[in-house]
Length: 282
Image (cartoon, rainbow, N blue to C red):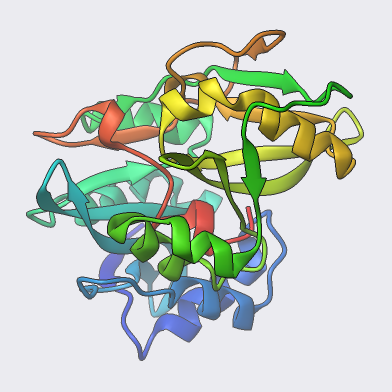
């Protein structure tokens, strides 16, 4: 077998890549859905949509990429988030080429938030580091709370966010599967982004972003009471996002760890905004 070629996914061949993903990815999305999702753009521009592998003119694999610029500890940092890495079985031995083309791009911090066990092993070979995978499951019980308020009105949320968080809000409010809250009390507000889900057959809330872990812990009871009154029976948040484990929470482990590659950032600098976790309804 001749070695396949790898080329960047650009505007002209994005439909070809999207058609390949629609046909071969486990998540059933149409070609149009893939194009829309992959074309999500944030500040900083993008060099490509990922990379495509071809053999004799036929697409046999590909890897998607999201790019964003983030302000981390007062410095603008460039991120590349890997998504939708898919290679036909006939060409699986060439998979590493796709990852190599992504990570050899200079000036970026790299993340992968949905690696399979096999992909995680490949990424660790490329010097990626795992993020702590433990998830705190907090029961939302019928226990009224008077310690703080929960605000879900968009107009009020915008008024309470600081400049940095307002930018996050405006960059993510377009996605209908993301839900936004502010909770706490005046002078102590925590901005929260979450998705609705299901756990053991019951509605749940999966936290994507915690604006302030200290305030989250302090006013967690207000949040869980808010969720309970709306029929959401459990809250799921990665333990690394928390300062302390909330009362009655139980920790689940055994997930495929999310991965990142950076020469200067630590795990505490990594969150799931500006990535496939928000741009695709995963």
